[in-house]
Image (cartoon, rainbow, N blue to C red; front, side, top):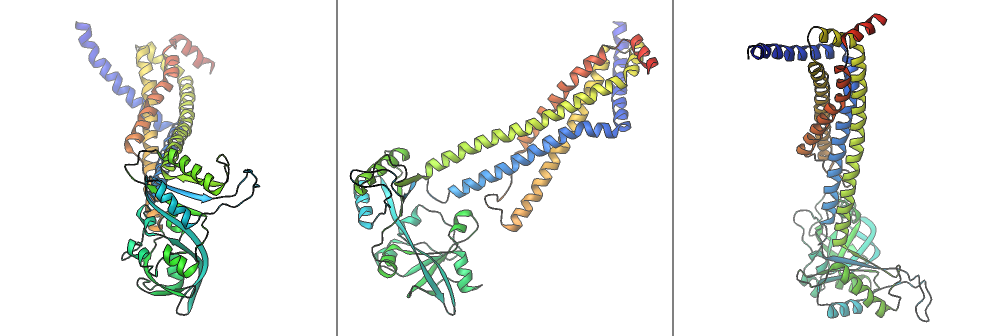
Length: 429
């Protein structure tokens, strides 16, 4: 009992002295310490950046996919690549308003349906003109699309279609070309010789609105009366009701088979029509980003592993350089346990400090990137960056555990040093 009471202060003294020696060793070998910790710091820094930017792009894609309702489907006419009965391949597939009316009658699952057809026309306001694409849509198109418009704008409504009103929604670029900095709302523009009142202006703060920033949209009935009578359409869009008892994928097959029968092409022809369901696009995007997240972690962990290897190598060098010191300490009473703890603590301190530096540096860079993105309105899909501090802290924690593991091997080697052998090693040096 008496011996145990005397051992306690000795152990406390040794721990304090061990920490002092580690700090002294780090201060005396700043370059070596920096090089051993740089791999850890760089690995955490890259991992934080990749996770932050990756999450930002993911949010950008999700925001892009919100431009249309999940149960919306777009159909494009293509060109047949297979023979059908006595007809050759290479036929262009078009739709007309009578076909769309029949689709609406035959498929009660459809909540809304809109043709989409375009033609190039000259738009004029005063002395300024702009040659651009004019697209005819029904009011239902705006029911399942979430295009962003400037304040004071409104989408087409049912009465615009029924009364064949000459109203228009224009893209941001059209507004700039025709009106410069003036407010276009409620102004009349000449589109192909017919005057249309501007009721809406699209924003261009996302990729969807940027793609239509040069377009003019008018109600489909007005389009057929004033722009192009009974046009053949290459595109139409629809969306299913919320209580539809059929999956998007099954309905896509169903509508494809219907079109094949009515437009006379082989159902298995992959190029005759293209059917894209937004719900499937969302699912595919989620799968892609899951894969990207896994890839980012793999890349980040590769950097971290290289850092662990560098720490292990540096600690082996440290043990070799301090062989005489460890031998002398063991000769005057230090146990292998104390030597092991000293090496492990040095690995822990270097790893923890380097990991925290990498994490804070990465978070700081992401904050600067966020400020730039906010000031510039974003870069394509990247509108913001985000890093989960919990995940970043977990990465540092894993890194610390890995650093301790990395220090185990050189620590074990140091604990096996024999005092006499250490003296001989020093004398040889």
